[in-house]
Image (cartoon, rainbow, N blue to C red; front, side, top):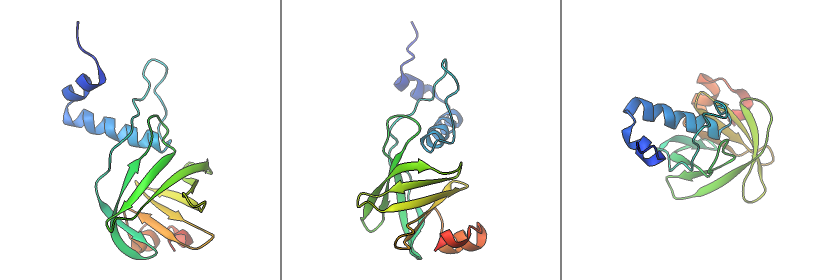
Length: 151
């Protein structure tokens, strides 16, 4: 009998299939990909730390990385860890459009999230704090042209 356990499947995947599987899991965690039907559900899992990327906090550029904190899709919670050691967790409150949602931090602050081509902006309208994941303030305002959400 052929071993088809998830760990065996992962070991036998080609690099292309493994990359596509990982991308599908990430999209599913943000609710951008739905299951393929009852016979082929997505295999969502808690994803480890992603690679360090260029980020911005209130215009200050520093590296950060995201960790999804879920065991099934869609993932409604993630942690951002900054290269200076500070981290925060964001939990989905509600989805407002296909590319925007509202998240809450552990102190009760609400953040508007706008996703753009794999990057995203978190903006706290109460205090004006702005986080740009996988980009800079200049990328957000001049390249992506996302307007006032860029801070």
